[in-house]
Length: 483
Ligand code: NAP
Ligand code: MG
Image (tube, rainbow, N blue to C red; front, side):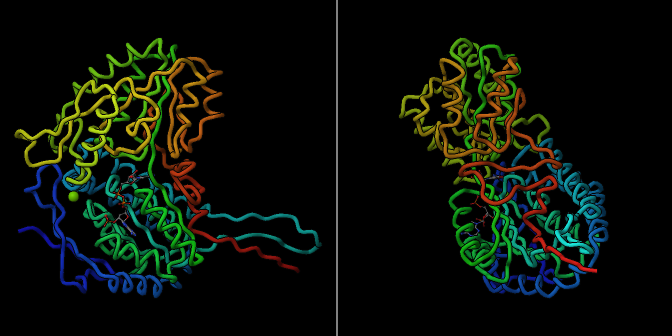
């Protein structure tokens, strides 16, 4: 029998008032049900918010180094349980076990990093205009905050929101994505086991429009950190800031790699294909557009097509698999619709493009890694986020044209350039409109100790990760002390 998982509110595992649950299935094998989760109501979300409010005073008074000790313990508990956590992640999300293990290790780094932040959460001391006056600032928590997460990184993203929220002294209501709630639940269980007091972290599963809306609409919730689609993110941003709260939204991307004529082409191909296809292209930082100089576009294209066609697709639990399924039928259909649009607009389909139906793919949401050549920057496949294993190759005449194509997008999350010319690399760094900039490295990947986030329509609010992450979760108090 498949297990039924509960909400975690005020330190208790409890059922939703709705009495209903939803199934979480394996996207590689829809006969495999990972578990049933609470289809919660707005009333459940309000109970979680009340529990967070009730725990607020005590948690705020717990010293930051003490809070850090709990996060460090959580990091150790994740390490001990990593194999099982990663396997459940693969089962519910579909990415390969190697990727799931890497993501789990990332969560350990995040908790360790922010555990240390408990001893560094500093303000500043400045000279005062007046004598015998101590003038300084301290960081205080916002209060109760909401965390709304997507399914594509079900452990890393909850970790990198929870850790800075908790170390800063906030209490939390978290709503995970309905596509992958089990991994988030594992983190909640571990934080409770690590000694987080009852009510400090509350966990409510259920639909975004019910549970998520209650969190973003409730004026008791002082800040909401969201990662997901830009339609939902912009709605949440408007709702939260409209009622005077703080909002931080990380949204989509249409990330370019520029390949210049002097690039190491094998390396450029390797990182472009990896960036585009790994995790089934379901990364906000996925490489989506290869903007390639005309002198090398033929070589790049031939090698990229060969690399994409050689990818082993399958169930992520199989160690031979390099690329797993799309998360669900709707996402798969979105990808297939974009592939049709590309064909209709005259982009040249060079490899892939099909759903896989035959066994062993018949019970999952599998699509072939797909490469389009001769893509015009105005085509839909060159402009919209696909969130699938699709790379478009756009030929350009020179560096200037490459720069203007790269920046001709409403998104600005990640971007990369492949070149051996340091001057052009630096010019790219200066002029590219993106929050994450790579030179000779893939658009994907992010280290925990530096800020993560985008420009333009990709992000709103202050950055996540790195030391600046606490800026979102704290407010500053300025103290004038005359003695
Ligand atoms: P999504 O539909 O926007 O969902 C994200 C989260 O918001 C889920 O927990 C969802 O709940 C919830 N939600 C949905 N409607 C809501 C509403 N009206 N009010 C409050 N919450 C609501 O995105 P997704 O399909 O899970 O993720 C894919 C997208 O995320 C892609 O576009 C990708 O680019 C983006 N993404 C961005 C980043 C980044 O850092 N920039 C990282 C990862 C993903 P349900 O699951 O119950 O619908
Ligand atoms: Mg699932």
